[in-house]
Image (cartoon, rainbow over all chains, first blue to last red; front, side):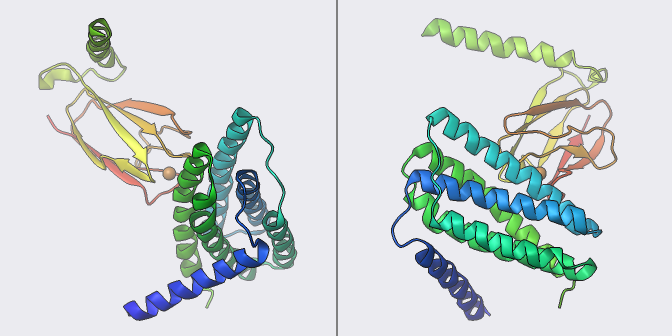
Amino acid sequence: MPRRLLLTTVAVLSVAAAGCASADEKAMNDLEIAHSAYTAGNLDIRYAHLALALSENETVRDFAATMIRDHSAVNDEAVALITKLKVTPQDNDLSRALVKGAGQKRAELVALKGQAFDCAYATNELGYHQVVNQTVEGSFIPQATVPELKDLLSDALVTFKVHEGHAEGMVASLNCG
Amino acid sequence: MARIAVTALLALLVAGPVSGGLPGSSGAAGGGAPRLHRVIIEDFAFRPQRLEVRPGDSVEWVNLDLAPHTASDVDGAWDSGELARQASFRASFGAAGNFAYLCAFHPMMRGEIVVAP
Ligand SMILES: [Cu+2]
């Protein structure tokens, strides 16, 4: 059992690392990290609005409302920080890849209904938070140089990890098979 | 420096009676002045998770997380509403008993106030 767990963890890590390496060969600067972290939060808020529009499942709707509330709070703090530092976040390859991927996923989700939508949304939320969390923890936090940005990312990661756990529970409760 | 320390101490002393003047703190018969206790909301948990107070005491919840939380009595007797980061909420406890509460946004976050005479 421990061995299987370890293998799964390694597989997820290497997928996340490969995703990062292909999107961005060199380390990102603070303004690029800020842009990508903000973009990732905004995209999850958009997924959540879609879920509130299309799902009638209470678990899914509660989760979506939490995503909007929590990611808005994190992004509000990010805006407060960039305003205080008087800087402008920089668009970059990772942000563009995130936006493109989410656009395709939304097109896929919007064509679904009922249980099919709920399962696709829940599964995507789990995968999305897994990849984003690996990136925040493995790349953004170690690469950020501005202490306030590092702190904000670390605080945000606490929230995102709880979301990942929630998403796991949501997928299990929906019996998607 | 010494003056600052004295001022801070005075501020602490003054804060004591103020908490006793909160609405609902009438049941201070347990002896001693009503006290103000603090529960920190951090890393998606209430700390301390279980808090023992005397009848008439007050409890203040302070959210230190980025994510908004609530402190909501499971029976609906009181509810902080949305607490943004650094926001706080106070409730006072008149009668003895065990009062379970949770975060309405993240219901796995649970806490308990034990009011013991
Ligand atoms: Cu909460």
